[in-house]
Image (tube, rainbow, N blue to C red):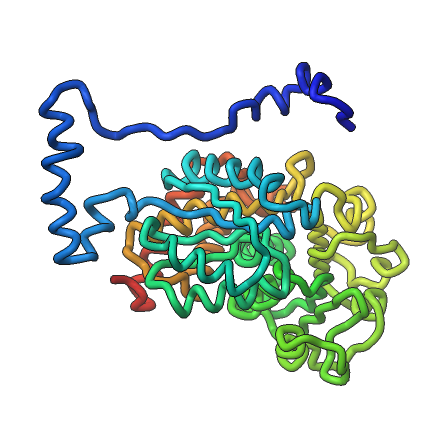
Length: 393
């Protein structure tokens, strides 16, 4: 642990972050008076008048058509928890770098000094004319569900909470390929989702939309299995309970895992070997808590044939960067006004499809986060789905 500013001098992480990771770069020359008159006054006034007459031109005549706001309130940053907006800025800067590097999308980190949902919705709505899309990031559940829904209902541009949907999209892609490797279909698998926060809810919804049998999915929160007999569930969890766990399984993770083919951990904590021992043979474990998975990969390999984590130092990293740069690129290029369920499923299919038959194996069910094929494939699939779903301008 760092104890003083001097401790950062020789730390390569702090050296890289000194001065931040972003800058603004002009796309036009300003070498002559003519350049200045075209880029700024008097020329710029003609562009302003054109947009005033037809506001849709803002998407082609300014950077709005390729710019995304990365918005957080600092309430659920990585695995660090509620560390506030200033401490969240390095992560939001990093997100913006990933947008540019992998998707060619300009992104601006915006860290809000409020955690009031009404205030967040008001501020983001007021900022929206400057951007072509809103990426919500590291906002705690269950507030994130309400904030995203209200912004989707209000704004004519895509709104996407990456902690929910980015994770869910990559999980669906990975599970489809895992099922293929194991010679099964995703609809034939009994799935346990450990965690009913933002990621757990979105993963469950995505799996159902992607072909999993809702009745064969069991979701757990900190108090055990979600089922219709529980009276302590918030509306989001109650809706999940009504749709999943057709067998009415109650109890803890060990009860849920008896006979299960798949475990997806998005909760943190530790899942013991006694619970894992009840799983069906030749299944899959995705232990996605980061940096400490719910099940260490070496232990998971004793009970499952396919193992994935959220870490880059183990095979099969479930990494959101496989999803969000291409999703926003495709949404912006197609003029999408929202991110539909069809666009999310299309993104998952594109990610899964990047790996050819000769590349797919138990140790490789998703492409590398650095694979240059991913973002273009996702962007094209998302753009096609946006047009097919009728959500483009």
